[in-house]
Length: 436
Image (cartoon, rainbow, N blue to C red; front, side, top):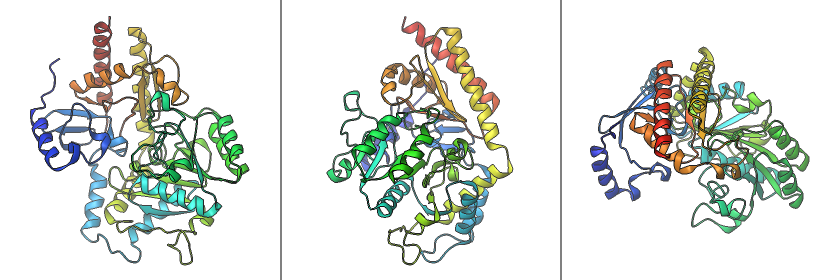
């Protein structure tokens, strides 16, 4: 099959580099091939050269309904025709959205809005330190919780840096790095030993309830419940980072699916089907420490918090989930995709593991289910990326980068899945033959 045309993308990318370092405004967007996207519609995205792709990247997951979903777009337009941002007081949209989140998310007695997942995790961690009077934090190797110094370590570590001191950026403060302790996902003994080694010092444990930063590593039975029990035992707050899992896996988040209630929850991405908004929610006794309530001593601020665009989009997204079988539909297509890929692997004699939950999946080129980041060092990264690049040439967009997840939206169709499966089979045959 002929390679897609990218002449216009290349020209525009060259221009972008004149004004922006690297030509992108988020580091992970700089991948090969570098495409300039111009249009999005439902399950599809289009680049400057006119190539159409079935989009499974979904901007790392926000588009649970699909790009430019008509109902969400309509409600955003309605909102900005009468309102935008006041910077004082409260809006009716903020109240309506707050009520919905508190009604659906088990841990949400109260909620506050901000603008990105990184902001939400920052606020949750600072609140935890204020409440407990402690400084240290537990996170897990391979999890991503945002760009700030508190958590930007041991994300996609090199094999020789797994579990070691691995700051994600120059310029990070040593005190922030060293007060964040790193544990192994699905290893309760490791977590308990960390608590014991730091008695009375750990303010909170933050975790992606499914490790989606590295594709889709599921919690083993009892792991999340064990974290809940350990945090209660040692007096630390349990923070579920549901920026990815929240609303994509259930309107109540993965905590509702798992039956585990954290103390604090961070949310974003699928919350507003691609419009910018995030949130931190939790128990009333904790949330009322924020100084949005007079007398609170934990600072919470942001000029664009609760903007009409994000709140209107989020209300509309949750209304779609309340009124339609969104999750039933995307879960069914997700399972059809996963099983279809497994069948292809069996027919072709390919050793690979198809991981996933609900509308999310990825194919790891290893033999067994990964339980943590270390297990993923066995994944054939070269084949993983080559596979995705070959699919891109056929109009299937999955981020051409190692151990990244894919997403299905309410706008994808049975025909999209069928076409994708055929392309997957063709590509795997080609790669198998080329590799002997």
